[in-house]
Length: 209
Image 1 (tube, rainbow, N blue to C red):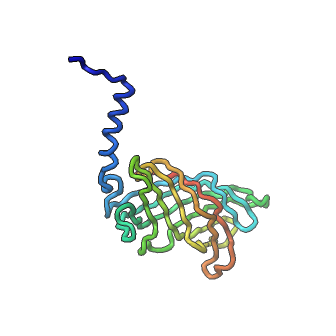
Image 2: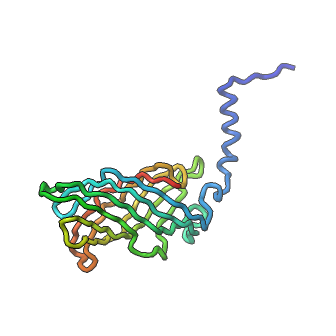
Image 3: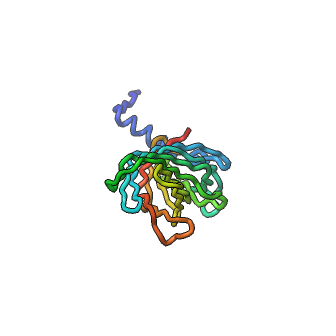
């Protein structure tokens, strides 16, 4: 009896075909984080363009936040809601000012400005094999601009929630870049019709601890 021989490339292709159904049939619990899990995320956003009145600034923000995984009643099989807490980023303003006027630098602090009771942030499984995700973080925050030449810090709040989106191949992310869906206008809490600053982009590299 003659033993049939297969070329190495053909044998590898046969093995991949045989393995694919098993991988595609993995339970979704294996590719979505378990409900109740809490995850610390770090963020690094260099060269972030920020417009403050007539002054164009470039700020390097660092910080992080926490998310708690919750069930998504609207799509329990391929989605999870994420409750955001503890969001905080800080950055420094350069001396001189983007408008050319003399100015001592200062600090900028971004902090979550309310408790995320009704979680709207999502982690969606967009492809089962290989796994791909879309993470959408819906964020309301306060921006505090503290400059030595100001008597008091300037405290602003988001006019509308920011949406920070990442396209991922794993979760928690590992150095993936997230981007704002749209620029974020910041206003005085008692005068929401006056846009004082605009976070034009927020290209933040996000990783899990």
